[in-house]
Amino acid sequence: MFSKLMVLLVAVVLLYGCQSQADSQNAEQSAKSEQTPPNEQTSVENFTLADYNGEEHTLAYYKDSKTIVLMFIATRCPVSNSYNERMAKLYADYHDRGIAFIGINSNKTEDVEEIKKHAQEHNLQFTILKDTKNVIADRLDASVTPEIYVLNSDFNVLYHGRIDDSMRAEEVKTRDLRKALDEILAGKAVNEARTKAFGCSIKKVSS
Amino acid sequence: MRYLLLLAFMFVLVACRTDQKDDRQRHVSQTSKNGGNPLVVEPIDEPAFEQLETERGGKVLLLNVWATWCIPCKEEFPDLIRLAEYYRDRNVEIVGLSVDFLDEVESRIKPFLMAQNVNFKVYVADFENQDKFINKLNSKWSGALPATFIFDAAGNQKVFLQGKQTYTEFKKRIERL
View 1: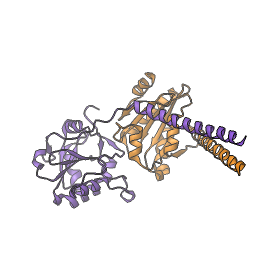
View 2: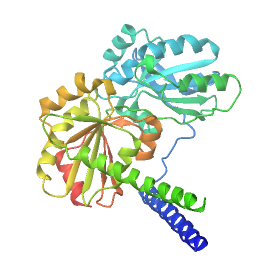
View 3: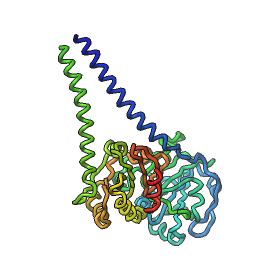
View 4: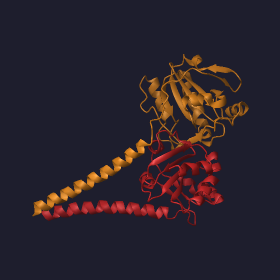
C-alpha cells in the first residue's frame, strides 16, 4: 500500500515539476520569437569629421594607436554629464599608454560652440568631433549617450557599451571600460565585450 | 519513518504552491493601487516585473520606461496620461517604470508625477543588474530612454519603441495588435 502511495506521490511531484518547466520554456520561447538578434558592429569603416574648432580628423590618423576609444557624448544629457569627471580621468590615466580618446557629439540640438564651451568647462581634453546629421552614429548604430566603442588599430570593435554601471560614481560596482582597456593593454581578449546602461537617446536629424 | 517521509513530500508540495499564491496576491495588491490616492510609487524587482509582463489577466500592457533626468520622457508623459484616460475601461493597462534611483522616489519621482496628475501605475526599478534587465526586455534595446514596450493580453512582447512617441503613435500600435 505504502509503495503504491509513494509511486503516486513521486509521479505527482514529477508532473508538477515538468509543468513548471514547460511553462517557463514556453514563456521564454515566445518572448524570444518577438526579438531578433541585434546588429552588432564588428568593425568600423574609416571616417572623417571636424572637431569643435573646425579641424578635420580622420580615423585612419589614429592607426598608430594601440587602441581607439570612441565615446558618444552629449552636453545636455544628465547621464553623459555625470560621467564628465570620469571621462577626464580615463583620458588622464590612459592617453599616454597608446590609447587614443575621441569624443563624438551626434546630437542635432547641440552645436559646436556649445560643445567647445562644455569641453572647456568640464576639462575634457580629448578631441571631440561634431557628427553633423548623425552619419557616424547611424553607421555604428549608436543611439545613447554615453556609449563607448573601443577599437583596435584595424578598427575592429573590441568593446561596446557603458563606462561603468552607475551614474553615481560612489555606487559603481563594475568599471567596465577600464576593465576592457586593462585587458587590451595586457594583451588579453576582452572578457565582457558588450554591456549596456540606461542613458539619453541621441537626438538624431531623423527623429 | 515511511509516514514521516510521506509527510515531508506533501509539505514541500504545499509550500511551493503557497509561495506562488502569495506572490500573485502581492502583485494584485500592487496593481490594485494603480491610480489610487495618495500616490504610491513602489519598487519593483525582477520576479515581480516578470509577473507584471506575463500575468496579464486578459489585458494588453503598454510599459513605458522613463526617468526624471530624461527630458523627452517628461515631454512624452502627457501623451501617456491621455492614453491611460482613453483606455481606462478598454482592457489596456498603461504602466510606467522609472529607472531613477530608489532614494529619489520622494525627491524627484513623486513631485513630477503629482505635477502631471498621473492616472496610471508607476513603479521604480529595483533591479540588481540593469544590463541584464535591458537585454531581457529586448536585446535590440540600447538602454536609451524613453523606451516603450507593448505586450498582448497573453504577455507576448509585440512592440518595442525607442525614443519619444506621441499619443497617436501609441494608440495606432495598440490598435494594430
